[in-house]
Image 1 (cartoon, rainbow, N blue to C red):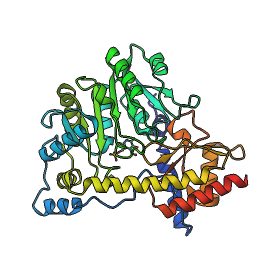
Image 2 (image 1 turned 90 degrees about the vertical axis):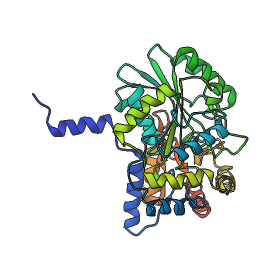
Image 3 (image 1 turned 180 degrees about the horizontal axis):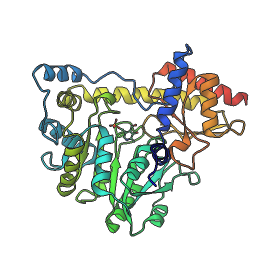
Length: 397
Ligand code: PLP
């Protein structure tokens, strides 16, 4: 007998649950609509200004008629600027003509990689806690996710290559790496990256390296795993202008890989979106090459550091809020001990009773049902008010 539409819809809801971050955001909006302001710590969006000249450049391009289809891979000058950026931050050279594609955000790059390289029978190792899209998209491609928990004793969400080696099988097709990471803010150190690269190359496994937070490293410099896989055709570099340039709505991402892989990705891209938004790409060139770029990035990094400091001071004497200071990105991922509540109960309670919106940790991995993700993307005064309210509630027990 044929399944009914409602059976199919139920199957789909189970298979692909709605985004846990959106669920909280929508609930927060409902509360706001009823006249109660909410402190937003749930959305991973920097509240910073647009980079100098980017808006003007996109507007001029639109006026000048850059409103039609462009090359599938994107504007050549943008790909060149991206190649320069990858060279500067990861020390690897990619050919803008054959190895770089401008995508509709890093999100499209993830879908392209999954559709081009994954299928039933393939396993993808995802160190958790992790951005929830990885799991969803890998499963949409029919492949199997293998969670590698980073919850292990006292490592501050740093990957243990020995644990990684234990979950590699002959079906492992890809490892996802995201440093600095969402939601933990953890920065994977160079010796770990070197070892992950060695294992990947030894077993012929792709490394999907999501570096969207590379410009937010608070101690030392960002190191890409690509530095240890420069000539390997198994390395896939993904980035975006969403976080570094506060351009989430522009939907500009990029994926770089050796030519054969890049060609496969481009074929998927042609059928998914044809090309990215033409005039937005002109503005993106300005963001990447603008004269005040370094100043802009340093300013944003400093703003995040100040917000991080607010939280560190606030949680110093709070035993119910256990957190490692994040080395990068703009998130905290504390374990919360409050009246035997799990993360969902605690997040609902804080939103409904105290108007503070946060994301429950189990959205980022099953092992984290007592953690919450706090984004410090919003301004300093939001962080001050939220830290006082949240820590006050936990301390009052
Ligand atoms: N990768 C990570 C780790 C993220 O946290 C996010 C957004 O939150 C993205 C990718 C999505 O980036 P984009 O806006 O470029 O699609």
